[in-house]
Length: 264
Image (cartoon, rainbow, N blue to C red; front, top):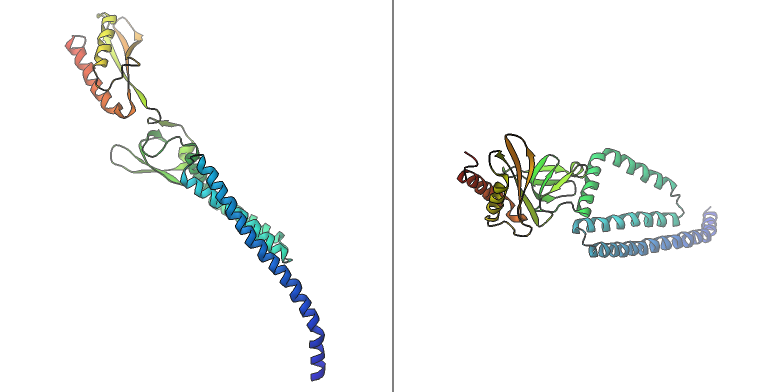
């Protein structure tokens, strides 16, 4: 019996050697595919990051896009390595697709905010420090996150708004341009010479310290009736001077109208 077992073992040795050589060769090739693929994935990820970085895209978006590219490429590399071992990968692909779909459905709202955050960081309708009206809120942008944006109104509150609500609505950015226009509507009794009132208002606007001389302040008649004229006064100021300039001009316009007996 012992001799028979020895003979069986001896007969199995060539097959075992052949199996080891065959599988070992596949294993070495699979390892090589994984290592080389991983290196290529990292290389392409770095190339993408550098390309996006040269476009002055937000650093957070650049990092995320690079990591996403690396992860996607690495998934295909792992599937290719497993396939080289002779394993059927169709089931892996199906499971991965089903899992991705399930996760996407479960996190639909979160992923929507995330993708909206990416769009906000790419297209930059506003940046940190800008004063905006958006999603029914008015205030200064404190932080732009991947899922939500923080807005600070003047009353000391801290408002966190999901990025989906920002990307899906109108955005008014008061800090986007260097020059803003202060507009002041007034009503003037029809008993006064409107041309003289307009000249007075232009001189009053020019007396404002922050008011720009070019373009010059102006007045426009927006409505007229038997009882009164409606004027719209406008003056250009630097963006950072807007609030201070508007308060100053409101005071000066009121004082001038009272001093010249246009207003009682």
